[in-house]
Length: 492
Image (cartoon, rainbow, N blue to C red):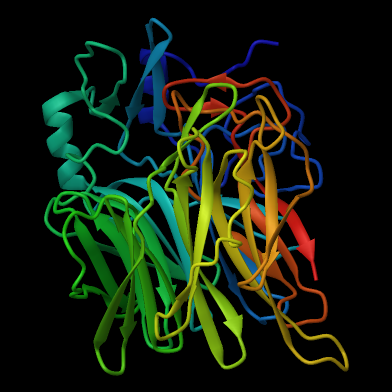
């Protein structure tokens, strides 16, 4: 059957601006896909019974509660048909109308044994919650961050290129409405929600004037929650720290100018690790809270692929690198994996570095998958295994999409590694054809989870954009199917 999508034209605008559905209400989008249209073996995270997702992608995760059996939270971008609508402008293009109140900030939690879904409404002073999810846990509280369009920036842009009180975005050639997705004239700063269950909690929003922040990464030490962004306006790192009760303030860093990537952070104890790219170079920085001391190391000079050219000729645009903590006795190492071009071929693959707390790193060439395919979008997990009568062991997993041995599909691969070997294998599920938002978007990044950590058989899984279950409907600002699933990878 033909997909029944959002209403088109002025009818859509009137529906979007006149009313909004209650938070958490199922949105009236019938794509004709089955309820269980998921990757084989996957669990439905975005949980929209009877409906398939539109632009549900880019995942973040955080646990709360008992370390061995916590409630997991998953944050993700999700299109908001309550206050967003579309106009067919011909030529295969459609414009997007984004009205005040739009929130692409959705999350799910599995506290009841299955994933349940909630959308957060915009806080006071914010017109739009845009996306780029980030999560962490601090003192038994979940922190969930996303980019924002403040009221004053929304009003200014509506006055410049607005349409009946809403922002109008267009990618059509020769458009009268030149706004683009993530337009730097509207976005300014970010908002962080904190709470035990996130449905209720505290908002903290912050900005640096009208500077455009991109990306978003949260991490917590023993004392603070840190939030990191790329200040695109100034091409540098924007780092903040605080708590839900104190608010967030800027932290000065010795990071250079020329930052042109997301800024990623991880933390353990009183130490913060931060990674970002300037051109083809990736820097890893360590911040010691006790000594207020920064240390910097360049870990890569061959970060030359922020996309993956698939074998069927399509190209996927990506963040292109990842940072993760690898647990060990007495602390943790930090791993960085990045995408790179394989010699003179057109393949994109991964390379890794594992660094100790003194930033002494292992760059073994065995820390990369085969070079005869495209391997991209890495995600890192680390499990602590406590089997009865046996010493504690530590197992590390990197997962990634790959088109190895495929012609027009991709599948999830993963490797269990110890810093010396990299034995890649196919994950559960099946091969899928990624459904892209025109022309190249499939989500920039994904999060991993460890269930039963510190028990005898921890289970590692990955949150991901799931395009299985139906024919792809690819548009300028949305794609179907595009929902979030949890795919199990390995049990130790």
